[in-house]
Amino acid sequence: MGIEIVGQIERINGKELSYGDFAERYLAKNQPVVISDLNEDWRAREDWVSENGRPNLHFFATHFGNSRVQVADCDTREYTDQKRLEMSVTEFVEQWTNNNSIEESVLYLKDWHFVKEYPDYTAYQTPQLFSDDWLNIYLDNYQMHEDKDNFHKYDQISCSDYRFVYMGGKGSWTPLHADVFRSYSWSANVCGKKRWLFLPPPQSHLVYDRYMKNCVYDIFEEVNETKFPGFKKTTWLECIQEPGEIIFVPSGWHHQVYNLEDTISINHNWLNAYNLSWVWDLLWKDYKDTEESIEDIRDICDDFEAICQRNLAANTGACITYLNLIDSYLSFPDLSQR
Image (cartoon, rainbow, N blue to C red; front, side, top):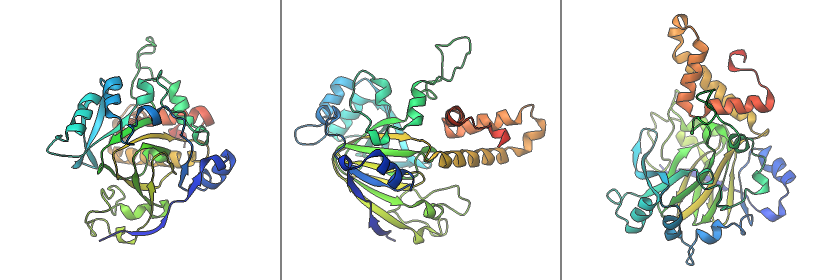
């Protein structure tokens, strides 16, 4: 069963787009767009790309080889995502170069917190269109202390950022998903070419099971119609992202992405006033689901609210960071008062 592609993502020259126009046409309307001509002067476009236009893997191994990174085995599913491996950048480059990794599996380096790890190496500048970024600005200055008396001790995960580098060979891919906490994202191809498939938010329920718990993993494999009865009704938008282009992914748009060539990309997740309601609504839903799942222990708990918060944080990673961020900007009441 093939998917139905009904249109292409709009394209625009970034030099002809003011922030006001971008906010009005794409942020406020929650619409995706492919933007060109915003990153010609990035250092990454020089250092990270060989003369033949392919990734300069030798540069990465030489300058950043000791970094420990998460690498997806694109041929192996593990629960709802691809199996993840941890290795050094040097090991990743060696397996990519020698093409002998895990019985010829296609590997994809994902979610590398490059900016946090190498703050003195300015690989790129965030384009002005995406600079109203409450999330990363907040996390750059935020520390969740484990010990209030020791201000040098903190949770590294909670204090990290949502700026990532991705690197993968031709054929690497990312399964169907919507971005974390329904944040916005932008993704810039430093080199290489990607194919994107997008599902508009009004159709999101069609890629979930009857209980809205499990999502379709791969839209191009045979999808079980009994488990996902609505999938056959989905209609998709498509785009081919060229080297140097940046794609804006709005809140709640499910997407699946393929590297058509050896590719390096820079990716940010972020939020601001335009999509804050998306983030808050999802967090509130997740909280209520968590509360419902442990309702049977409410009467025997000294602080049921605190247990809900801890379980939610464990299930969703940086959830508490998001809630603190929202509270900082808008002085929202805590969840118990919602």
